[in-house]
Length: 130
Image 1: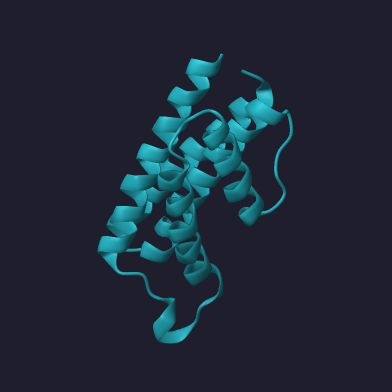
Image 2: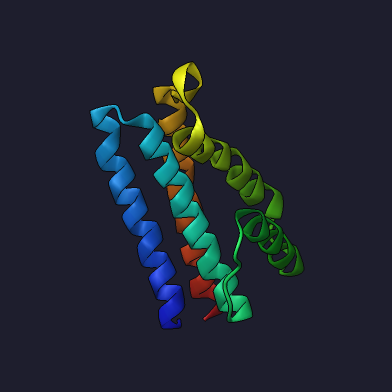
């Protein structure tokens, strides 16, 4: 694996660690945001390993990931659906105020569990391709 791929995976793993630390403190919005970022960075690692370049936008990551996974006969829908759903959590954490700025605990926990699986799956995909 290239150093860029390793760097993206490291960032993904660190985001998971930080999210896990924040859940017991009831910092759900930030934990949910970090869950999304973990998956985003794992996707970037995969994209970089295939294309030797990163994608600049969040929507670009989803569409390029879908293209690559489909091309490689993998189920793209599960992963791109999660990225879209988790991005809404990131938007809540980053932009919402007032009543709309809260994320329920169960949603934050779900986002983290799914992000952990996402990162793990892409680590496996990257090992298989190297």
